Length: 238
Image (cartoon, rainbow, N blue to C red; front, side, top):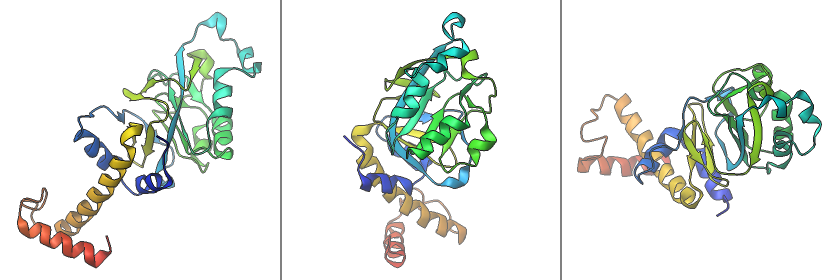
């Protein structure tokens, strides 16, 4: 099922932490991409359908610098075929000893209208990528070219990224804290539930900052909490 504009907008306003809780309620425990961090946390939420690239360990005789001259090279091909509005997700085997991509390729994704890029490896030119208006997540900077460690092999296939399973078309959400992957078939219901959870958590935060105890409030086991939340929603238009 394609990501709707309504679902996309809902997911732009909720946290990855809240989404992971909604997924956990459905028994999904491994959808958070481990050990990736935003290069520019101020860009707001990244939301888009996954378009994947898979690397394997480089075999030296098949991975000389000249492979980039081939227009069908999987890394170059992926950059030009990642759909506008999608997030490129790269399986770099959690190996940041060489770059998954650099600033020129990420800039090309940005100009093509892609929603972001995630790797469980590293980016080279990371200071330059941090200045671009496209969300980018990696483990850490990695200056050596990808050819020294990685061999690009497959595009738009199921992968693992930071121990999270990623299928093409899954909905990828990133915020200042990290990245989560939502199975496509439940993206709409997760988005709606996360919006409701966010409203309640905002109410709880307001109450806690006023000095209220969390007991009976979070979770809402006291009847008074439900009444207070209803009044808060009315007052805040939530």
